[in-house]
Image 1 (cartoon, rainbow, N blue to C red):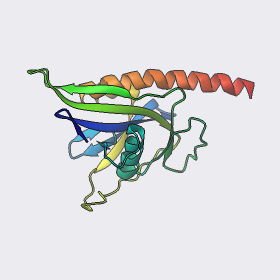
Image 2 (image 1 turned 90 degrees about the vertical axis):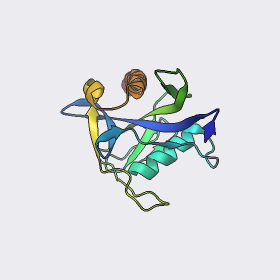
Image 3 (image 1 turned 180 degrees about the vertical axis):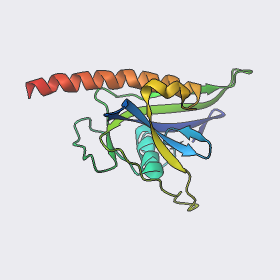
Image 4 (image 1 turned 120 degrees about the vertical axis):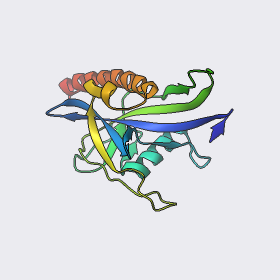
Length: 175
């Protein structure tokens, strides 16, 4: 969907705890660059979240649940929205010379237990859009090659993720 001359896309930031490196974010490799699963918001999408979930499924095989209480299977490519997330994180890619907004990106932080991803070809072209993936430790996100404006969104999402984890740990004490 195009809006007022700029591109609009939706993305999921998939967090996972790795025993060796701590909290990680899933990045997909497209040739020499890494990025978050993403895509354009389309008319058929019921919401921006639906667009982010659809694109994540199409690009790396993850089913995204809108229920923060959804049970996750560590062997399945599935993730759930974080507790308390009702609105996306909004990031803007702005032309540094003109100040004109080139792209608005809506980010939804989600969590998974699964260490895998399934790289799928584009449904229309049959071409594999991504050549690999990696779980980037949050502590090295600034060295990941991810655009600066998206790095800021990942850092904001990580703050939400940490709060979500703290609430879950507190709830476990009462169960």
